[in-house]
Amino acid sequence: MSIETQIEIEIQKVTAHIGARVLGVDINKPLDAEQVTAIREALNVHKALVFDDVHLDDEGQEAFARHFGDLTTAHPTVPAVDGAPNVLPVDSERGRANHWHTDVTFVLNPPQASTLRSITVPPYGGETLIASSAAAYRDLPEPLRALADTLWAEHTNDYDYAVPDEEIDDEKAAQRAQFTSIKFRTVHPVVRVHPLTGERGLFIGGFAQRIVGLSPGESRKLLDILQAYVTRPENILRHRWSPNQLVLFDNRITQHYAIDNYDNQPRRLNRVTVAGDIPTGIEGKESYSIEGDASHYTSVAE
Image (tube, rainbow, N blue to C red):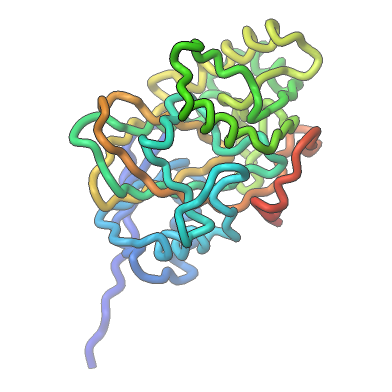
């Protein structure tokens, strides 16, 4: 009788504050409960996980993401991959997300986790930066941390992107019109408590446009100060994409940025996201919606 030896999952840290490579698990196959638990625990600790030698199609990526909860559709306003309503093409030909953000924070319950799978990798550049907003919160000086704990911010997909008029051609104007075809405004705590770990993180990013109770100008200055802690180099994983990779990151306690440094080379990742809960602040108060119904996009995770 042959005895099959089970390979234990190995987690290799990539940086001190964020990121790990996962070895010893084949995500091309269905995962058992122990494997899912181990990956979830690693995600709680490291915030972003890298899987190599991934040979998944869209259906396989959906199946992997579904281990962690119900899926969202691709996006509240942007079209999905043909025939795959849960898959968003992150394609250089459809725009470049070269700004710091957390996915879809303008809705009431943004995704809890995001998966990105490399489809077309440019020969140089095109890295994805992922930042730990938990490390950023820990870095705050005590007076600034005490202030942040009290703040709430309005997130929206409809705001002045401050792009010079001469840079907006018909195609970009059409993309922006599509992105804002449903207008969303949601108020979230600036300091979010992670529902699984209890960690606190700065929940801001590019869609956070105004601090409740402050003017737009005052809001921008304060948000810029807080955002500078998120984007400290020590808090960032700089992931250089290779073929056949998948990155899973915790959307509740990270931000990310796609670097536009690959000229006009094609770059394509496919994204699948897992439905999330409604954020809560340190006093247990939940986020609330001002405008926009996202029920067509996501259920609310328990």
